[in-house]
Length: 564
Image (cartoon, rainbow, N blue to C red; front, side):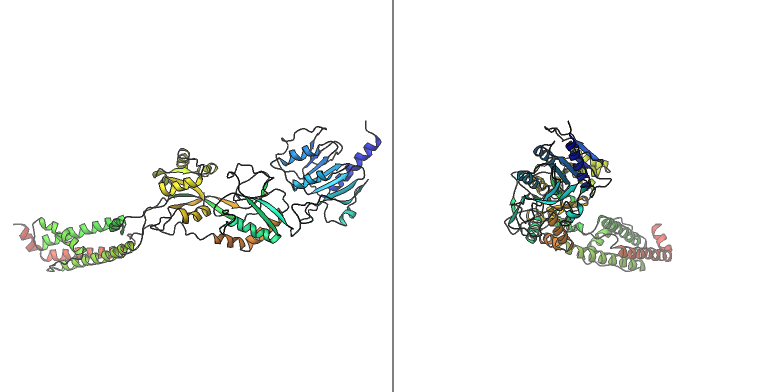
């Protein structure tokens, strides 16, 4: 049965808590209340804890802004254990604990879980206290002493006295420098971001983090997991405060800093093969140029035969076959006696000589250029090329939906998917077995390609990017949610990023050559020879015109000859 003192005590506590919360709440604030005496008339989620509190797993499907916990009705240990296991728990939320006494073990447990925005309200004295665990600048030796913020009266919290010492009630005092403090860092091996912690080539993220920690005078204790963590692996929050090498994945209980760089996902496919040197004989010209050249060769041979047959009155059919032979001989720059009895012959020889010298000049220059270096076949450039090559695919399955707009390739992806437990082995298969395409981050592949995937003879990478990119990810540090160093690390990281220091570390590992620095063979096209062909057409038409005039001049003798 409630006594008058109980009612008065409950009323005073209620007024005290309401007056504190009124400074921080708005219409969107959600507050979790656990306990029996506090009846706050603002948006709340109420937990009806008995002396044996029930589970609250179903409740925490989002982050909440504040918690009011009446320790007369709630088991502190059970509540904190349930709370910190929730994936959406926000350690920066505000906590008000109501009780008769607050032990050092109670406060130590809060500090171990990095719950720092805390006020303690005493039932009997209505004293409002707080604690500042890292005020002395040490991560190991936390300060568990309570500091009095002020007292509540029957009208609420005495704000004037509280603000005389502190600018805000929930002050989080974090020093700029730390004394003899060490932070535990879990390193997932991921080239070129995290590599070897005790070597010159440590990786972009390790060097960047070391520089940041030097600013705040904190050292790092680097460890590696017994097995490489996957995006689904839950990292032990008690053994690691920072995760490096997995800045684009989410881990429960950890929080991303501001992104310091981005990386793009690309398909990487087998690079094009070197062209055998014997193929240079016909690779100098494109197919269309060769077809036009054969056409011109045939037209000139036929025209030459017709003019000789009519003007020189040569009926023998074997003369037709001598013309291509003579043209081929001239094309190979071999001598031949030519008869210029008619003007048509002169125009015809002009066509032949111009055609031979111009095409030979282009051909020899291109052929010499090809012989002076290494050239490569046409590479895989389209999704159709991937399907035509029947390549198997290794990719992150969620990204398959990025290709839903290409139904043919989407179905191909499902049928040809190979799940690689070791991505490095599948990349090897792409480079050396050449029967696979892999979806990988550009910075990672471009760094390792120089050491592992380069042809020793040609110096050309054995794998190449397939554009466009599939996805862009932000890279950041994963820091334990609520960790006191989070704000300092993020501020320095942002400063480094905005002032080019991050770029310095990235460029330090950017010594690779571009994957597309060795272009495919460039053939002489019809466009390159367009002037030659236009001149040839003009000469051909002129030759036909002159031939027509000469035919008219000698029509009588020609007709008599063929009428025999």
